[in-house]
Image (tube, rainbow, N blue to C red; front, top):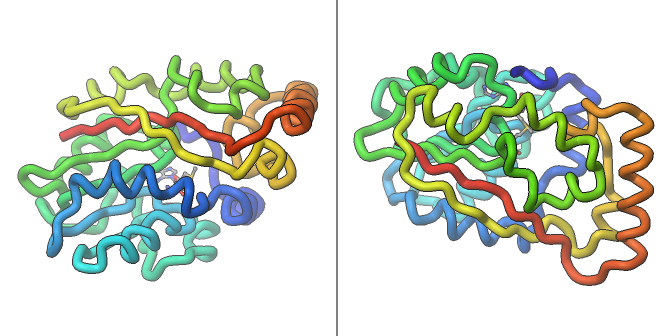
Length: 237
Ligand SMILES: C[S@@+](CC[C@H](N)C(=O)[O-])C[C@H]1O[C@@H](n2cnc3c(N)ncnc32)[C@H](O)[C@@H]1O
């Protein structure tokens, strides 16, 4: 898969747009908090600029948070310290040392899911869980971006399905839907939109992108209230 390599421009765009506000984070605090224990360890795998790791440390100060990220450009912009080099198939941690592996919008970048499953299960402690946040092939319906940028739905053909992730070597615990406030309004999301911050928008044509921008502009004029996206949370062992 390896959808895009995060170089300087992508990392800067990501750091500029993709960090959720407190309203967006609260649903995830509840969803993840059920699996967190004091004295345990959370691994933020594919941590990007470390915004989740930062939130986890502030929400659960008695739990150790470790962040691993392959892209230098993302690590250089990290809002959490330390973010160490590594990837899903090469995690610099001992066997059985993690209670929660968190992967937020990472799974579609992993080139070899089977190798990743072996490595992730190696670091997982008995009873630990893997929490995969994001969008899977065929499951875009709750995400506003695909309502505006219809051509981006085809990009998801290259994303793994839920079954493919499970079959790579995990046991399915649950597939949950989490509603997050992604922006205070469609207008705010539109005004802050940075194409390079979104893999699906990078992988459509310029014409398709322009058409989506126009649909989103119209929605920004017409729709009121917060922009709420419904993302998947796949819980695995
Ligand atoms: C969309 S960003 C998400 C960053 C962060 N998890 C977040 O939600 O803010 C995807 C991240 O996955 C990382 N990534 C790409 N391939 C990876 C792999 N094989 N293993 C782990 N992370 C990977 C990228 O470098 C990038 O930082």
